[in-house]
Image 1 (tube, helix red, strand yellow):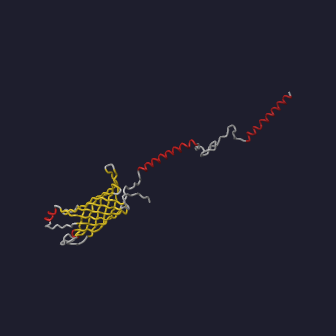
Image 2: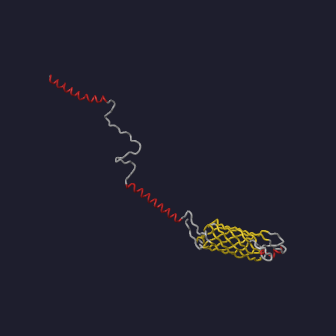
Image 3: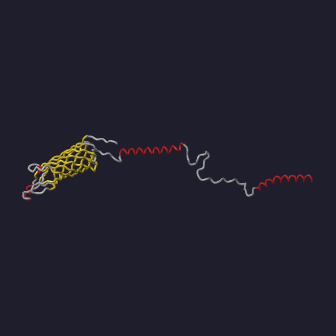
Length: 284
């Protein structure tokens, strides 16, 4: 019985020695639960590196990047082609179809007065002009008139007791400044585009009437004129025009009456030839 009790006691002591270190370790770190694994910290804000060190959300593969580039290139190319084609058809500032700057103009006209009820005056005229600018020119013109008696003379003499006072303009020479403020184009019969401009003219010069020659021999009278008209340009060297002008000059039709300001309004049709015959655009 004695050996058995001794052996049992030795086994109990050995078991206690094995259990004691575990209890001591558990008592050294109170409150720490080692039964569950530690939870990872929450992810920080911003992109996180991937497994290979690359930032997520940025695809650096060639296949994915090639598709947007080719699509955008095609879109830009087609848009540029459309813009270039549209620019060829429509110009923001179109060139004028007829240039006059630096060119000489030589023309002729057929004037006829429209404000004399007793002596209708018809004749011919000629002019030469130099265009300092497309919109401005200096013009020297001369007109010659022939008086044509109308049927109103007899009635006028009866009404005025055989005294019909009228200044009979025979010729005039005037230096005018011609300004063209309006320029445009019009379709002619739906087949051709014809360019045109509207012009205004004013100047001064000399006028000769019946009193300028024998028997009175008063010589020329100082004169001034204003007018305007419309010109068409069917060719690079040709212009067709129509206009109205008024000439003012002092005259004394009869020695028994005082001098008065005379007004002669004439309508005219004419043409002009430009030199040189053609023009070209020059880039400064």
